[in-house]
Amino acid sequence: MKLLPERTIERLSKYRRVLQRELDNGTDHIYSHELAKLLHITPVQVRRDIMLIGHTGTLRKGYGIENLIKLIGEIIDCSSSEQNVAIIGIGKLGQALLEYLNSSNTRLNLSAVFDNNPDKIGDSFGGTLCHNIDNLKKIIIRENITIGILTVPPEYAKEISARMVDAGILGIMNYTPVSLKLDHAFLEEYDVITSLEKVAYFAKPRHAEFL
Amino acid sequence: MKLLPERTIERLSKYRRVLQRELDNGTDHIYSHELAKLLHITPVQVRRDIMLIGHTGTLRKGYGIENLIKLIGEIIDCSSSEQNVAIIGIGKLGQALLEYLNSSNTRLNLSAVFDNNPDKIGDSFGGTLCHNIDNLKKIIIRENITIGILTVPPEYAKEISARMVDAGILGIMNYTPVSLKLDHAFLEEYDVITSLEKVAYFAKPRHAEFL
Image 1 (cartoon, rainbow over the protein chains, first blue to last red):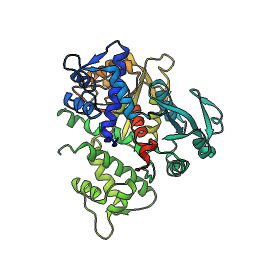
Image 2 (spheres, chains in turn purple, cyan):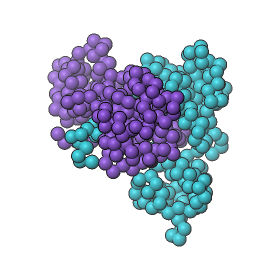
Image 3 (tube, chains in turn red, yellow):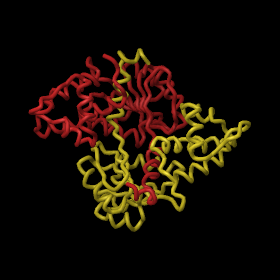
Image 4 (cartoon, one colour):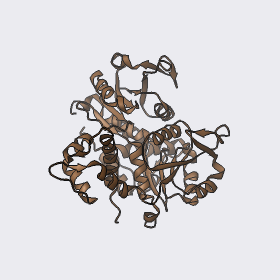
């Protein structure tokens, strides 16, 4: 199957989480306009995305939630097995992300965490062993880890990301404020301060009157 | 001045951080193609953004870094004073974000944190006092807080965000997995799992060969 656009993947991921919540609450069908409302997007967008992955609802009952969750899973999960993830740098942000991962029902499997702090190496973080960053390549290969969450101090970001890719990592989620460039892996970056400065800009009193 | 587009504001915020780093390293001028390279975008994009805010470099020496930082600040900061920020929910993620804020040289001023945990209320987090969430409105008004970072458990997200807006908050950065809708405040949302599932999708072995 052809790769879907990034924004579509983001929405499918969100649909699945909302649908799982509805299913857990005992709902078995949902209309596109209801799903749209839960995510504050347009019903047209929902229908377009869901047609794109080859699902159709009925006019009478809407989409079957269980089927739709399964179909989204076939598109965005690795169908053969879970994908293994590592968190590199288990400071406060790393630990917060670990809690997020462990409390969500994503198919992503946290296989290892890494740090250079001797007090953390060998400890368990939410059930996952912290390895010495010196063993990064060995553990990534052994545990078949393909996704890395980068939460090291900024001065290490470039070097460690290069070592991750060298070890076989195929995708990096970069939470450091350093903008990276990777040649042989997918890169997604999130910068806290940029988001906050954006909110601050649009939340200025002299602008807010236009909200 | 007319409001600039969201993506422009994000880039200006990133330019400023990179420029500050260059200035701290003793550089006083920079060419658009150098700035572009540091952020992995095109020189055309950089020149367009910087023309938009009314700055021009010289062909010989490029942009004067100190002037450019000052000009970006006039655009994206509140010119009269710092903007006050509160973190609502001081768990691991809240504490990680607090460290981020305290270690960056943004003009955003962290004025208060809130929680409902009696063990945290009254404690100092990186120098900022933790208040009882019951006093949210009173403290927000008293401290003139206009920006809120929402890191509460998902089940509280909707109620607390409504109370924040009611108290006078003009912008909310929502880190909970619950999608919100605000009527009288600017809203920016970031969902960890969506980002990770997107990386996972594009980092599948069967896709990675196209990278």
